[in-house]
Image 1 (cartoon, rainbow, N blue to C red):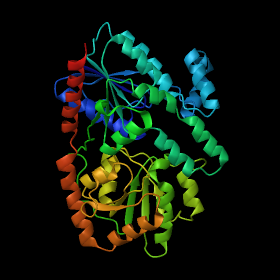
Image 2: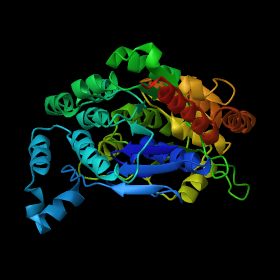
Image 3: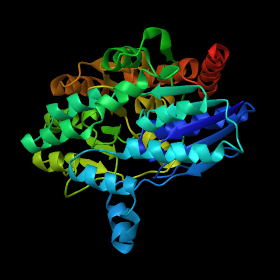
Image 4: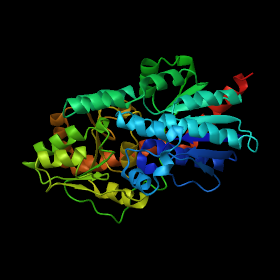
Length: 413
């Protein structure tokens, strides 16, 4: 089968979409299929045997793009680039739309040489994807979570009116609502995400399919030579994403600080001037107990998971919850919330402890309980590893995704 995967940001450091792209394309290729990916920046590491086609995305919110334009301002003098510039000045986020149009033209350029059997969109859900339907090729989309959830979390944690207004303007809800309903099938990565997609975008249930993400258990595993650091916590999250619950986690750390010598490691790039998390660390006087790692290689990330006594996922919503599952694969116990799909990943009382979302006191209580019981931490860590091995395999995810491709192809005229 010839498969074309689309992803507006393919790099794994950009979150779950990049991880999904890398491992799904790798497994599909290993199973003997011809896999091409059309991706925007920041560009991903491409698995061996997978063919990448890179398209431009200026992303005027990014300081690197601004520096490039200062060096070569003529780059903006195209209709699409001018649109991106104007939209960002109005607090809008045009990246997905712009990527989809560029991907459409790239795909049109590729089709004379590669007649793809299926197009698989990784949550772009923009108007250019609808244009691709004119090629007569079935289109499947993966929705990790619907964007209205991001808006709700952002507004709830906004610091002022300007931030709230910016969040309302930022997200292209109508576009994704319209496009998602016109896909041949929609894959979601959990039952929770499927129901949210149905309710938020009006996608009919007969079009929805659930395929859980996988975990690379050969990479994410316990490192026997790595010693646990006492009272250490880890959170792996894009802290600019308000759904990740850093607001509530740092409040919980402040509650714990007086009783226990806790140390929290945040795996993310801090932005000292504008970053939400660094602002909260200063506000709550936590500079002595909170540290940021910046971007880590995968081996470095595994080592940090193994050093931590507890991994925390404080999200107010998760379409799946990859960091929780990665920590479990490393035999590190998890404290997570009951938000979104996390109860589908973490078995409460067995592989971790679940608490209500947006509740710093409950988070602090669960962390304190686990830090005080070494046997409980060890047992939960072992059970977490077993759960990941049983339920979250990229090979199984690829097989189930292929079955959906074949279903769509069988139904096509």
